Image (tube, rainbow over all chains, first blue to last red; front, side):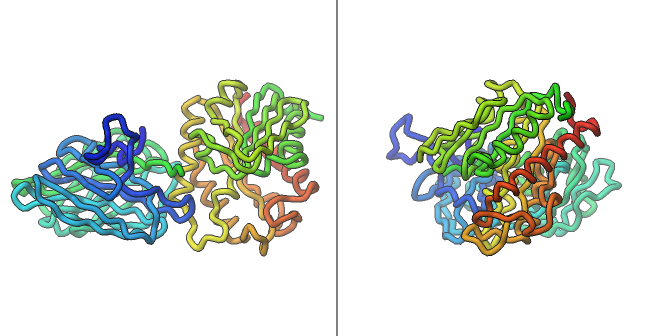
Length: 223
Length: 219
């Protein structure tokens, strides 16, 4: 699958059938960093850079884009739009850094932007890499647990933080728990060796905890 | 001569270590043929793993060799690259050997580009796996320090260790186990002398023999 960012709608000036465009230039082969966007709001959002526009729906796995290679050390700027309200985006990535731009908010309040930053070192083709992103400000310490609740896979993830762990590639039944509340099931399916997975905990518009789980996709670096 | 590799149709692909006469396209290829394998070898200078997945252009030479024929070396500055899909379709291998490491290690770069390397390696190993082919990945040799390639023993070790964790389901051959750091002389810090390529080719073939004997490579 071509890079999700490259699936972005072209700018209004672009004619139909124009080549797919990326929000930001691909990084150099050495020292590359990776950037993706996740729409966790109840509304569709758009992200505009000087080069292109990316639309993320409000439902389904397409809410989270692929990690796109970008140039580290360069300020990447853009505009995030939700229900006609906008917020500026500026982020500079370090070499090897992975940044998820999580977009929350509502039609009334407009977009909220949270940057989730990490420099992962857990690449392993025999294991599955699991990450828990806590974007629920009401949850002080999110946990990823086996569905029976007895085994903690990842624990103590504070709001706007990430927990990460390598696990055996199995079809595990998982849930996200917070305090004494009812765990929210995670639909991840069978994990594959060498693949990386993200579990997002966020609050729905009525403040109920919600979970979105998916396999990470990395767009290839190509000049 | 033994016939330990008889029954194997081996496709060897690699970087610049495969693109000059007397490099691995001669020494490793000859060793495998001598042990009974059917062998096709291809080299694309300066290529990363992903260049064998996504169509690329080769700027510093490419080479191919089939069976007992001589290597065909093409030094045109903008030669079209081969993809692994094309080569598998053309050669029908039952084993793919990948020799790529030095081009991706980020020699001279402060930060080891592990995320990018992992993505490149996965792109190729998953493509090979999609053909349901067994594969072996050969890591880089020590080379020499202090050259314009900025190769260091520390980074070679880091790269080799990282590849060993990244190439599954391919098996991994750790070339740093074949010599001591700096033991094999080079012409430029990265490319070995003829005697070095003879030793490296022989050692890789011996490692493949071992994997066959252990039943980890099936004929």
